[in-house]
Amino acid sequence: MASQSVGIIYKHHHDPAKEEAERLSAWFRTRGIRVFSEEMDAKGPANGTFKESSAIPNDVNWVVVLGGDGTLLGAARRVGRYGVPILGVNLGGLGFLTCIPLVRMYPVVETMIRDGLDVETRVMLEARVMRNAMEAIRFQVLNDVVLNKSTLARIIDLDVTINDDFLTTFRADGLIISTATGSTAYNLSAGGPIIYPTSESLVLTPICPFTLTNRPIIVPDKAVIEIALGKESEETVILTFDGQVGFDLLHEDVVTIRKSNEKITLFKSPDQSYFEILRTKLMWGGLPKGSMMDDGRSRAR
Image (cartoon, rainbow, N blue to C red):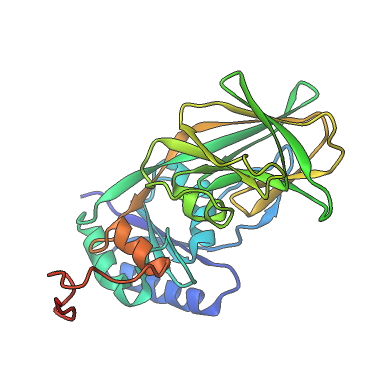
């Protein structure tokens, strides 16, 4: 039998995450599983030669992330894009991606190493910036690509083309291009729709649009989205990847966004559906009154 290995990625400068990572490492080693551990500092500047790398080999059997969704996003870009399945354990706040609570970690990990957990595949985006007919940067994201103004008072003009067909010029504070996975992130805060995470679609959501009829639009994940600064726009625009890595755009830059050839594999919660996660995280309320699934606490009237 081939030896097994696991990567443990834990939140940067977070003592509880570091302590849990050390305990979990010892737990794996008592079972003969080789452990690679890494602290994740997901934020950082980007430039034309920016490459995210990890000390964890890309051929480990599993990756366990200890932190919040931001920690998992960094892990997804560095390791998960190679197809390594990721288990997200929530040590943070909301946690749509890191959906396993810490108190249930060891039973779930035990099930994971017995190949008892289901997985699902999530789409990633590839963003490319062309500058003076040359590629300035290319980056992979799991959640979203965001174009934002750098000043508070002005709005920006963004000319958007989809599959070589002009869509519109968004006059807004910015524009979010999100995967279905990222629909519950910045997209949701900006009034965009929640999309089932395995859906094959992308959503474009303007941020505080000047024209109130500019609404979010959902397109197939085969769409190629091209964005250029409008001719009247003189504002500095920042391109942000997964809310963690930023890149300054120049006026004549062209941003092209499409589905990446790389995908992320996430372990599913063994006893929570996606809709239950939504109800819990967004505090939508419990089950219908009188439901047989309401643990006997509801009373039919």
